[in-house]
View 1 (tube, rainbow, N blue to C red):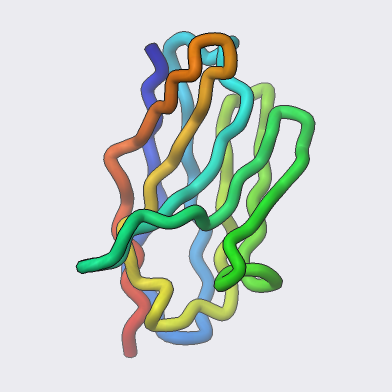
View 2: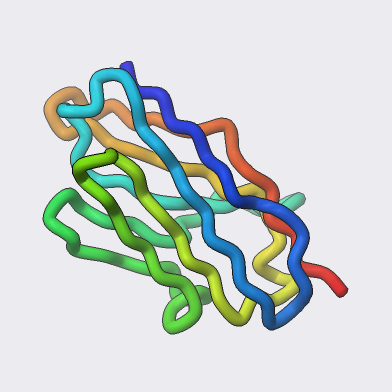
Amino acid sequence: QVQLVESGGGLVQPGGSLRLSCAASGSIFSIDGMGWYRQAPGKQRELVAGITSGGTTKYGDSVKDRFTISRDNAKYTVYLQMNSLKPEDTAVYYCNANEPNTGMNYWGKGTLVTVSS
């Protein structure tokens, strides 16, 4: 089992920045990909950004050039630097980790990001 704990959410004005963190614990040696998803009220959960253990990244179209995902493999922690935030970025952000040997996907409880003036 893998546990994921997110932190760093909050209220920010449009154009501002936030940095989210997600720390993994438990059976962490089985983890490969980690990433962030978000879900806004009334909408489906969508990919924000993902990163493999080798550092390959991918981003959702709406956040490219504004958000940056990074990872500290020694700490099994993934970060999401969010710049130039927009009101439409308001959502609950969930950390995700996958375990290729078993096909398991793990989720954190989520952290709320609100972009509003």
